[in-house]
Image (cartoon, rainbow, N blue to C red; front, side, top):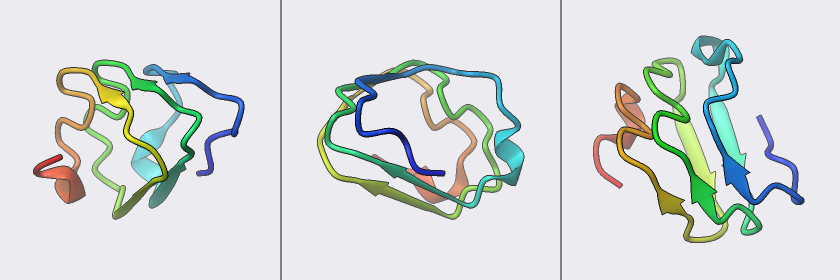
Length: 68
């Protein structure tokens, strides 16, 4: 999943994220809201281009994000 370059904030948008394997987050994203990727157990790779503010439990349950 590639996040649009125009995005500035990511929230829990209610898509079936169990089927996502990779997510690319561009530098334009300034904030990742709490629980945005909560329990997205299928994700194996994240790519960050910037340094967004990350809300609590944004990556809870994501095996590849044990620390961030």
